[in-house]
Length: 193
Image 1 (cartoon, rainbow, N blue to C red):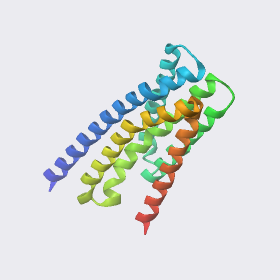
Image 2: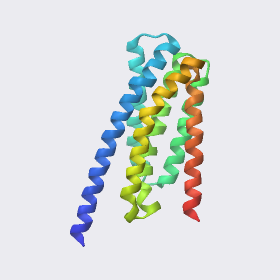
Image 3: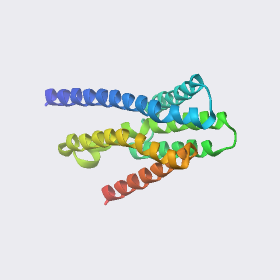
Image 4: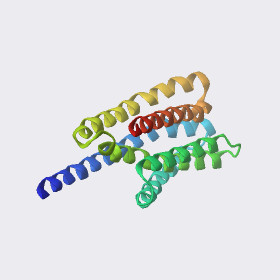
């Protein structure tokens, strides 16, 4: 009925708002725990400069979210995730360029820009991929996984960077990106069958 459709729409809007808040808090936490300390140690820059880099990362997410909203009219969720992964990869590769702070700042911007469509598109596509009856439970698992990742990856990276140095950041991020790409593609293939 129409009231059920409205109720479901309200629940979806409420879930989306909660996801955005959780994602924003997670990103703030990641920047505070990972990115800013990495920038400070990597280039021995002032904290103000590192905060500026964090701002560049968030600017990338913000602009990416805006552009993603426009592009979703032309591309589906699967394509948007693939585009996001490609942009993240470009950001990671940019961090390898021997151009100092410019490469790091541009890389962080591109990583943020590429991250922008991934989580919302994965959440949005859940009902189509797994059915409306299963979507609440699966979205809960997706959100819990995001929490677990944001809780344990920063200290894990801290241990790794203490052993290998902060210059391992692009390799670490690249490894996670490769895993994400293959898992996403495996899911897409399994659903298409």
